[in-house]
Length: 139
Image (cartoon, rainbow, N blue to C red; front, side):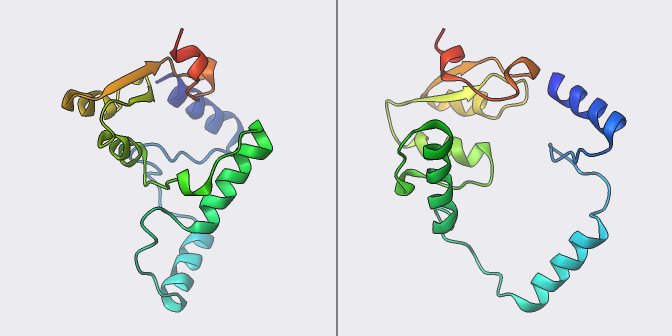
């Protein structure tokens, strides 16, 4: 909730924030976005994407880990999901592994944990810039 309150204050004070949290944005899409969507629908074949994610995106994400954190990540180990629930269900089949998730009030990961897999969680909020941290979660 702290993050949502801070986001609402930022929107009020600066006007440059677009809220993409659950149920948002509640207003219609901007005209430029609607025009781009019409153009894409009229000119592009819009079938299903590659199941694990577009290869170029997976390569770019792996590259970002190297550039930003000095970590070598194989693009084949990157999986694009439509949200945290999708990201959580992938390791469910990997029996015995612990999954790191943020500790939030609305997280579906809490109920998914009832199926018997291990979860390591930690604090999340303004003080952590809403980013899970292995260091904080394992303390």
